[in-house]
Picture 1: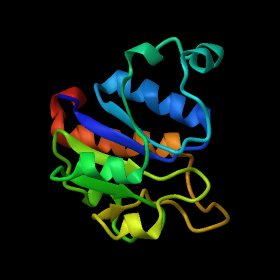
Picture 2: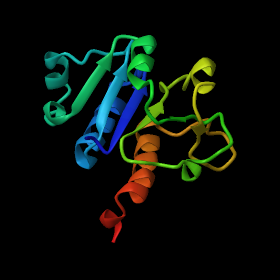
Picture 3: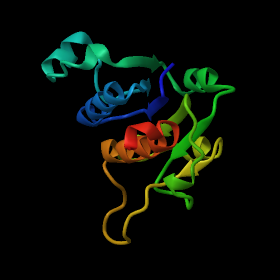
Length: 154
């Protein structure tokens, strides 16, 4: 069983998805991509991008949001968005949780944010609207690992 199911909801920037895929391989998480995507995940595209680890990614692709939510039914789901008050350290992480992140330019849609608890990674007020998707996924994943795999941190 994967430690977490990391979900990129309609991602648009291929290098961010590649970085998250690498993270998933490194920590034993599954990667879920919810279509539409802003890029191809064909073997040819992956080879051209130099993602030599991609074959090791525990990958599931969902054709649309409805298919993903049908898969997620009955699972523990946590959403991550810059547009919420609670922070990622307030999340009650458990092994097998589904961690959902929105696409780079827009984040998660309002109807999705209404479905489950949402958390943010805090940052200083100022000109930055949000952090890079790959960075947010890393911060959240390692905070979750600190809770479910504390022996990794001794």
